[in-house]
Amino acid sequence: MRSVATTLVFALAMTLAACSHLATRSPVGVDLSGTWVLDAPHSDSPPPLRRHTGAEFDRRYADGGMPRFGGPMPLLPMLSAAEMTIAQDPVSMGIAYPDSPYRDLKWGTEKRDLYTVDAGWDDTNRLVIETSSKPLDVREVYSLNASGDTLTLQIELSGQRIDKRQFTRVFHRKAVQPAR
Image (cartoon, rainbow, N blue to C red; front, side, top):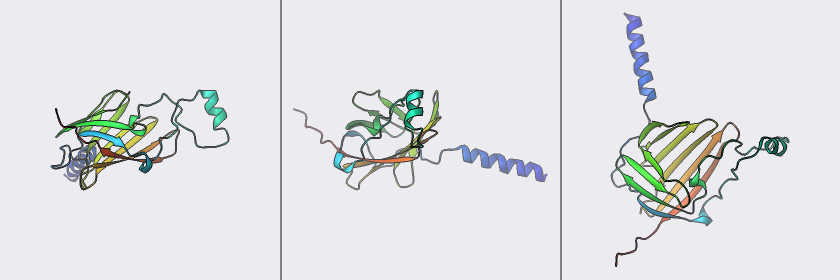
């Protein structure tokens, strides 16, 4: 009898551990929708991520310096975009970046081809997007100021070929032009 109870407790613990730690409904009063323009003086510069050939990678980092990402270049428009347009509803969000593919996110955990995305809201009403893959993990945290006109995006990169790096990008909500 004891082993059955132990097995049930273990199964329940594993099930709870597999659940996302993030809420899957947008908080009331938190709306990221709109066009956001980068405040460059208050933002970190984008990192020098680019693809290196094997020989270039070996030569460039033979001295033990920090390597840049050496695999196929991941799509990381949030690191370099000067503007983004967000459309948010209670269970998902889309982000349009200039000159980049449209990014569609649903709250919860989604397994995609080569990576897993866990997106949702933490207990302080910040949007958290964690993208896990090999060789790169990306964590994005979106937070609004009290008046809702400044969006701070904190980005953390970590992986097999890079040391953990953090970047902060600050955006201001673009005023909506009245219809004529």
